[in-house]
Image (cartoon, rainbow, N blue to C red; front, side):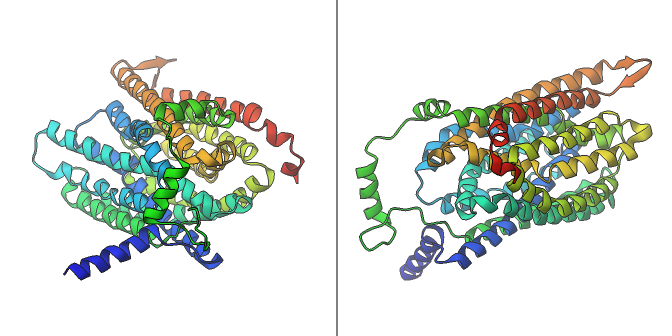
Length: 467
């Protein structure tokens, strides 16, 4: 028995801490595994958020404003990055940490079973928020390490094209799973969650396990110091080396102060704060608006989303290559204009024109998201200090995420107020979400201005950007 335990732990150690790429094929296989992991991750993220999570929260009897605030709790959990960033930065190998954190996504599956229990309403809400927040916490504290890991696996000159291909595949898997689940949910009566929610939980559980398995198959680039024979150091030898090289470790406060002294970090932080404000002032409340006020069915929302996402998948590789060629910031400005147009259509949507306005909004938003995530990630990689990338990403995520939660909480209170005291203009009732979408338009315009005049200034002065 002891021998079996020894063999098992030894094999686990080789998988988690000694899985090194030997050649380009290993790197290519790791990138393919990352694509699989992202397909599972994005599918899981959509099924455990947005329209489906709104259905679960609505069954608990929560208001639109409160639902939107809970959906934004993911950004509040980013504050914990400040407490874990030093630990993560000092990890010589991140694979074991990442796999353990990714496995915690199984808690997203369990939140769909909570509405089924015959507990008091407050008890069910407490456990729902607790499990959802814990799962979001593990996602947030592992994201900087994952991003740093992927940055080492993908050459800079092909980064945009690779991430675009990855995003196209992941989006296709995501919208397919959402379409299927939308049809499944619509097959049951609105109040019969005892059949639809367990199915949702089982699917999310399977996706969480697939996400973890894909990371287990990936290998980390060689980053450890080498000994006299040219092999990476491990165990006691590595600890002695670290003790010689790092006799004094900086505190969290010192790391934050050092980060603010880096110009690229300050630009990336401001950009992320403005963008998070633009997104979280409106988007967390749009799902409930589509279901309650606009009276759109799950199936219809998923079918339109599926069709628009196919267009996004087709355009994503071309937009990614354009970002590599013309500059990430300049390309982002163009797709943000489309994002604004999507908000305009949704702001103008009312029950009488819900279908065409939602279709137009979904099309513009889907195409813009073909590059928003990719472009923001690549700009961070360009602006941040490569030696402190994980630390600086953690600080940016924590500060901009906390700011986003505060914005969303205030917007949630505004939603509840406007629904209690409706505003009428020219004898026409103004829906609360129309106001928040207008605020989102203004904030996204601020993102474009900051990108164009601050971040893109270097790109516009570089001849290669126009090549």
